[in-house]
Image (tube, rainbow, N blue to C red; front, side, top):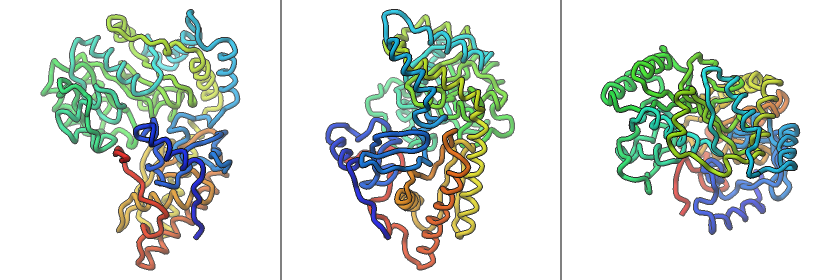
Length: 443
């Protein structure tokens, strides 16, 4: 069995850990989340669904595609051309960029229930802005939430009152160090499709709730009128309903997934797929709610830079022109079916989840699932794939690329099956440590 040769990327990462606490800016890009000590770590170029590492080795990205931000694929020529034109005409000025108005008009056109838009640069801070605006509008403090919504104080405060509050929302082990203790009890979690839990919180904190913040969909579809009941109860109580569309937005349709699900919130937050990789997020909301942003201070120089506005406008145009959501769904369905068939063929127990554009799997066996994930990533890397136990589909993928990918999945699943048949352990075939799961210190 050939071994993976460490290259410039892994060497640079060792240097990075000396000067960058945590090694990377984004937890989801930490090499330890994929293949500790062996992951290429850095890229020199990305185009379509291909990535080149610092040693010039070429890979096909069948994992997160820019952590879900590149719905058209890497370095889309038309989107990048719009960005370059904005650069040539001045990315920053004392005057405002007209594109911020054009984009607000386009977002409201896609979401006719809305009447106002504000911007930020990243999803997490946009969620913080949305929470601030909702509290300013209602003059109340408590937020009920469901799902993952970033790193800011308003969200991590959940672990002040209950250190395990966020464990099964997204990431376990998040210590709210640095979050003011006075925020304890200001945000309370409930679980997706658990309407009784939500109703109990609404009743217990009646008259004190500013907003309900949730992902309308992520891994599972709503059941038994879950979203309809939440919409009905928040309207009745005068509570702002905020949909976090950072992950699901621009996957099931042009705009928020709530358009497909048939529920209109009071605010919706977008980033990632809206921009095709450019740093911009948007808070879209009902006019009366968004007007509250004028009564609280929200202002930042780089919220006004032009380049991301121009790129985002072009991305939304192309997303609609090519009906990209149809390809995301089609490819995701093929991938999930393929995982299931290859697992059955090789006698593996597999759990598959996620909406089609955001698919993921986990192999269940006598060893920790992270061992199987690490082995899968290791062997797929040898075949020229940036792979994980997730596949975020994009317009840059193709049926042929997915067909070849699934052939290699079959080979790796067969390897696991053969190791099992010899009563050996898969972990003994790893060339480095087992990958990490969620948040953790590196040293």
